[in-house]
Image (cartoon, rainbow, N blue to C red; front, top):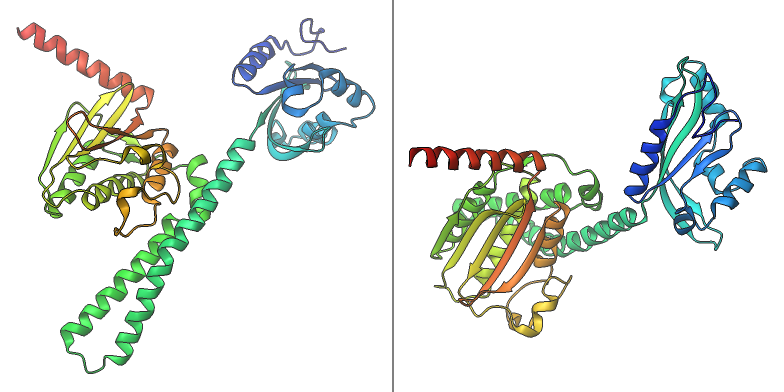
Length: 384
């Protein structure tokens, strides 16, 4: 019989399976190893009870009865898979599936199963190595992003549809309007169409659901983001300062999403502070990441509202008479968190509101920047 610790002659030595088990379980996943000859498990992670609700003994017993149990679903179709692989179908070497698995208490758990065949020296499949991952949280995140996107899409689309209908009526009835007025109508109609198209492109439920799990590896320059923010503040007529220290040339991220998050912070600063209030923008490398801060010199967020300002739909005590839906900060934090970062608020020591975005630097970039700074320091000390 196939064993993990004492492989028989001619069978694959799966000492590497021990490493596979350790790595899988360190990551919180379940590992299992099946003997391809008997179809029986030679190893199942002890944590299977917590994730699936079945004990290791339950699973062994169920498979011994011909595959009537949860692990049968995890490795369903193994005989056919082995037959196809032996016939030359290389796609059967590694298989990845995602499905719902029923627990003994009747509840379902969403799992991702990744399995690969372990081969001997002759290329024959001797064992099936697999890991099981609970993806319930990921699925719930996707559902939440879809719900959020649907709500946000509706919040923006409703007033845009009103504008679109009004401008179409003006164009239809304004035949006696002069050319300058008609050109303004056309510009409004074009801008409305563009905004609606942007909703479809960036805030569709499908795109928001995919954003968290399959984010495109675009690059964005943090210094450029800060400079653009300063330029927007100046266009709005605000005095603004910029203090940017050493920053990496680029970060992995969705430029349009991060610009949107910063724009939300700027819009709030413009909306809730007096017209001549100064703004301060800062950026620096901090804690293996990049910190970007927008601070104003206004009254700040009322203390009673601080704990809820990032809640969906929440509007504070100082928003009376100010247009808004209470979605801006919620949306901004969602975008930042999708990038693996954080968005926080603090009442600044010198007064005013300070919003801080922190984004991680990929390890290779962080090491490169640290090396560059160290080399620069060494060169400076040599000059001294």
